[in-house]
Length: 117
Image (cartoon, rainbow, N blue to C red):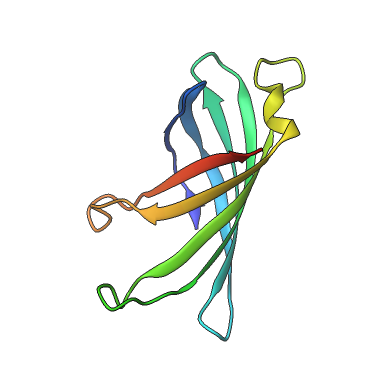
């Protein structure tokens, strides 16, 4: 799956997702998928940060939502050592992934990221 672009915003950084990354998917016999997404962020101040996001998604139906899925990822950042974002290299980050509410019209995902302390 090609990553065609997007935006990101957090408390200490924001910018765009550079088109050209990809999300490789391994579909398992049990219905789960292992996603391996690699792409690059361009911060508003011009710093390029490489991302590797490894996601596990599997069916997790509930009574209210029989189509629900478990979507959790481990996210690795590779930021330049001479940038103000170098701290991203020194932590483990976890994330969630969900489809945009208008996914049928806007085929985009929303990734939320948390730093593990």
